[in-house]
Amino acid sequence: GCVSAGMAAALASLGLMDSIDKIYGSSAGSVVGSYMVSRQMCLDVYIDILPLAKKKFVCKKRFWKSQLFSIVDVLKSGLTKRTDMQVHNRNPGMNISYVLDGIMGRDQGIRPLDMKKFQENDEKQPLRVVASGIDSDGQMQYKCLG
Image 1 (cartoon, rainbow, N blue to C red):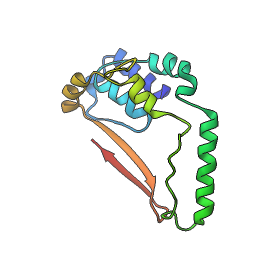
Image 2: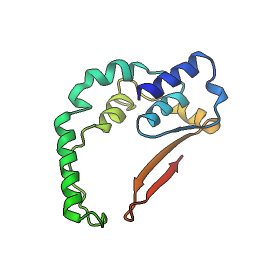
Image 3: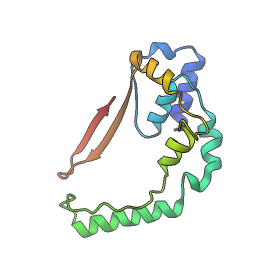
Image 4: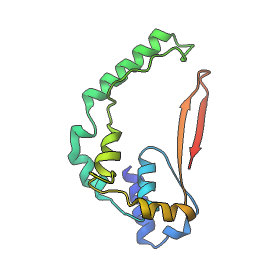
């Protein structure tokens, strides 16, 4: 997230924001892209807010527990068929809800995303969110949203 936020800040400071036709991002890049489209340069999100959030955002215990469950799922299902894996209701190591609700959220966010400005600018400079995953045959699949 810090690298893409730095890139966005450089583009903004050089006055190049309007020279980009579309913005693509996945994971943290989609958060940075959202702020780019809305013309909000919230660098403090990556420099100050997330590091200070500590366990609200990242928890090593949750991360390793999640990894362990994933390994157990793979071993249980055998390495050939991934379609039989169970989906567990568990907390991941990184709490993306904290970012979406606690930082970007309209009502309680620390740095709420300006949705009106986002929607205006998304018409001429759309944000495309890229998602990827592995299908049951072990092939990488991509999908571009937006």
